[in-house]
Image 1 (cartoon, rainbow, N blue to C red):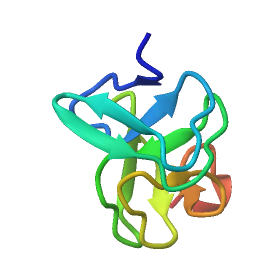
Image 2: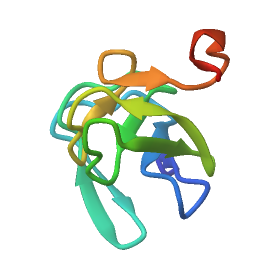
Image 3: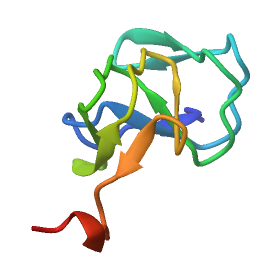
Amino acid sequence: MNPIIHVNEKDNVVTCLRPLSKGESVEIEGRTITANADIPVFHKMAIEPIEPGGVCYKYGEVIGDATEAIGIGDHVHLHNIESTRGRGDKQL
């Protein structure tokens, strides 16, 4: 079983279906992505570089903005992404 799920071509993050160990490689659409850190199950890993302020896509939907540069294989979570969903404090 593939340890990651990539649902939509817009997605720049994938969901890990099991924990990934730092240095572990996975295949996605003919590319090899190596985890830069231990990534817990159901957490996200970047498959494209994302610049600070860049948009993170999961399942074809925007899930937040990067708060720092995110590299391919980086763990994507609260430490480097800010949710843009359900943020009443950011609505116009």
